[in-house]
Image (cartoon, rainbow, N blue to C red):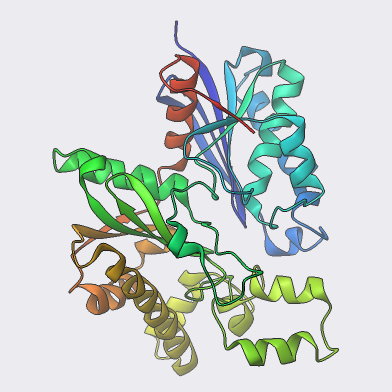
Length: 354
């Protein structure tokens, strides 16, 4: 008998929902959220009820009662360091996310909350899979110049790991045989090193390149001056780093399609800023190449804005010397969530307890 699995993937400006019969999609839908709508909420966590309601209404639209589901699986967020794979969502995890106990604010954290809300009503189990914080990061990669600050791995694991696996399959190889650098290009951008099936190093979305909604790495002394200028609160500065930075800060919108259109129409500011973003992405990817000591099979560019030829051409021009540049636009996140939950249900994979 096939298992009905609901997969939920919240992003900064959308909620993607898919219903699967085992690994076969019954429906997948993307609910876009207008920036004006999201700005009504003081925090990401406060969007929980709104986004859970959307998921429930979508099930009703397709005549699916929650108790028909075998499991609900949500995208894992910026939790403390985890292993790759699935985790049972429990009250401890929910409490950490809601009260931000060692959890960085990020839209992906809503995945656990939405999945838990639906599972509670359906009396089913809920999971997260391949959380943003999952990795096998090398101890040497965690050391910084501040003894008080440890560099943990935060990346778009779900999409990047799924793309690495599928790319290896396309070559008739096992994912565990390959050395890859994978860059997820979306509202936030992260770049990771995959060595023989393990994520050994990562540049996260808050300390590498800038992106549509993230400031990326900036000169620290100037940043400290801004923090203590008296012009911004702590929460406002956090939003300037994640959510209100990058392209959004320059143009009032993070919509790459709009800004790319301006650049192609010879708007000098748009062309310069968009090219600068590509430049910083190329530098970030290049900074990870030495981790593999030159033995990189390919660099994969994935995510929503990998659909932009303007962007991928500029990046590829910079990094082509590292290895073959593979463009895999879009994402496989809903499929990866459902596949992970199915392996847990069938006992093919052991679920971790948070």
